[in-house]
Amino acid sequence: MPSTNSRPKTFIHIMHKIILSLIAALLSITAVNAANPQADALLRQAADKLRNAKSVSATCAINSDGHSTQARIIMSGRRFRIESPGYATWFDGRTQWTYSASTGEVTVTEPTAGELAESNPLSVIEAFTSAYNSSITSAAGDTRRISMKARRSDAEISSAEVTLNARTTLPVSIDLTYASGQKVAVSIEAISTGGALPSSTFTFDKAHYPGATINDLR
Image (cartoon, rainbow, N blue to C red; front, side, top):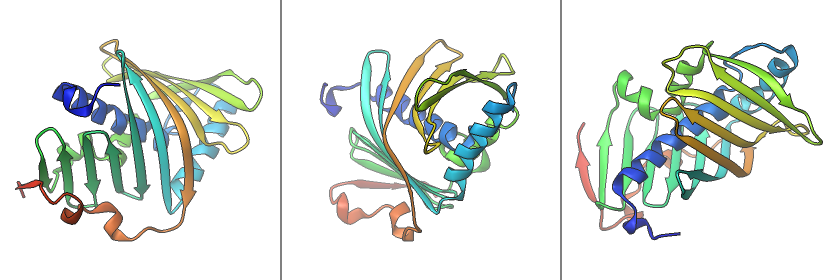
């Protein structure tokens, strides 16, 4: 795998957006009109477990267009933190900090509703509501694979394939197909629910990035 600094900046931004789409899929997989009652029930079990948890942590491997990256995601209500090579984002419900290793800068914003639609996973979820039809396409062994198809032709994510662990009802993989034709394969290497986390989990700590330049746009 090439070093972070050798990757185009656009790739890091693309992967960041993909990660946000992944979080939306993780938390909103029940926000669909299921063509199959079994798919609907299974998706609801999975999402209820994620939504009712005080916190959710996941480690993922993401592959797209011949590139790959790792990401660690922590969520708690509307708050989230994303860490991936060369990029990190913290959102505490009001303020968002975005760090880019390629520039050495931290951009601080208080996102508007429109901006949150692109950067806040729970805002992205709203775009999924009643926008997808779902059905179980495979029920082999301990996994259940569910197909989600966009009802609107102009949806950014035209389809998704979600594979759940039948025992835990937690997702183990998500494959996304964008309207542009781009395909993204996400393998969830570890995912768990946990207890409440301190607010500092979702705020930027300059002590961990002593050389970073702060670009405060609030």
